[in-house]
Image 1 (tube, protein in one colour):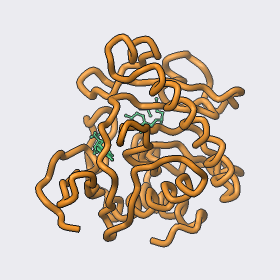
Image 2 (image 1 turned 90 degrees about the horizontal axis):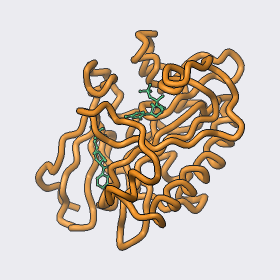
Image 3 (image 1 turned 180 degrees about the vertical axis):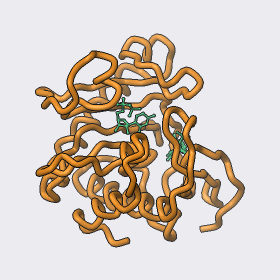
Amino acid sequence: MQKLEELFTGKAKSVFKTDDADKLILEFRDDTSAFDGEKIVQLERKGMVNNKFNAFIMQKLQAAGIPTHFESLLSDTESLVKKLDMIPVECVVRNISAGSIVKRLGVEEGLDLNPPTFEFFLKNDALHDPMINDYHIRSFGWATEEEVAAMKKLTFQVNDILTKLFDAAELLLVDYKLEFGRFNGEIFLGDEFSPDGCRLWDKETREKMDKDRFRQDLGNVIESYEAVARRLGVEL
Ligand code: ADP
Ligand code: UDP
């Protein structure tokens, strides 16, 4: 597999073409951003930790029947993935209230949500990723009704698989964001699943072990990502 020119530089990952038109290389960088790219710093080892964390989770999801873009780990910071035609929406499931929903609805942090909530956001930093609904997605042609249904179904299936996986590691999966894309007419899970895109709390103490440590200046950001990885059995 040959790594060719860079196709896109995101906030946390760089995307490279390969000599296979159907495959891309994702390079996980140490750049860490919050508040739509307003706060950016480099956190040593983050690229490596998130690349390996993501590979571990994607393989678990794949084994449980979720179609994912993940192909293989290429190095400490690079993974080979299927090239998807990305749908520009973020799918968020919340099991416990935290983050934007607390501000938006004026609810307390830490409430158990039964059933878990589902939200779509438009992937657009300039507009601060506004919340949208199924109709916006269909009316503006970002995805079809069938694709919307597939994304919702897969996002909830991921919740069933991962809440159990994290529970066994004494962690609460508070919320998470997924992105999907098309490959040969089918919907695949793309992008990444790492502590950058989910909230994880210690089950006993409810200590935050995810990107909120960076957002809220709590310190020990990567140390916490590594602690989560160790609990799950991810080899770093
Ligand atoms: P951001 O877009 O938020 O700055 P990243 O730094 O993570 O995020 O950039 C990675 C980019 O690659 C994102 O735009 C994401 O949608 C895209 N991407 C992720 N997986 C794939 C894939 N399999 N095929 C094509 N694009 C992908
Ligand atoms: N999230 C993400 N990327 C985004 C927005 C949110 O990965 O652009 C994740 C975030 O880490 C959290 C979940 O989606 O796990 C819900 O985020 P929320 O709406 O609470 O927004 P936040 O306040 O975290 O920006």
